[in-house]
Length: 229
Image 1 (spheres, rainbow, N blue to C red):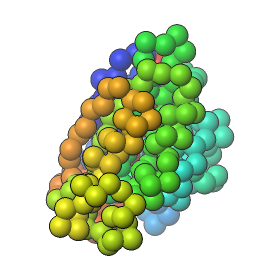
Image 2 (cartoon, rainbow, N blue to C red):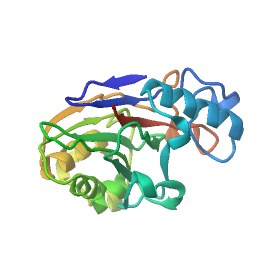
Image 3 (cartoon, rainbow, N blue to C red):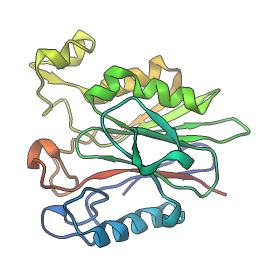
């Protein structure tokens, strides 16, 4: 896993595909999906929660649909649709799932009331404002964020119907830079401190699941976090 050393009482990790129990195309730390063994997914999520020292029975996750919808952790039950979750309660883990889209963690710092959000941001979510909505849910800043592994500008070829939704310089030779698109969305929403992983999920099959590389039959990684008590 890739930890984020955020300022404040936050424990956040971006998962890889390694360290779990799933088999075949879901090997091994698959955190979601309906084709893999449900028991394996539960065990993998337990292991991910263990990394942030939180109770897996309390894990909050959305039913992701490339929206700009943000839920409070108490309302994210895996059934309601949404693509970002925020929490203000200690030891309640939150999880966003990705397999090429951008996983983002956002936290307040220098504030008496800690709040944390995790975001699943593909081109649809970025274009429709999921980052700004997540930050608005966190209240007053200042904010810090980390952009995790996602398909890189080396590999993310798109059509003009997608590239036209973003600043012109973000697409070169039909390849959209989702990492920089996410960074700009964070900056425009007032985030002052941003860390980027700059790891391409498609280019690293030993580390990450990738929809662009493997299609529908594959697992998902993600970003998991909690406020420490």
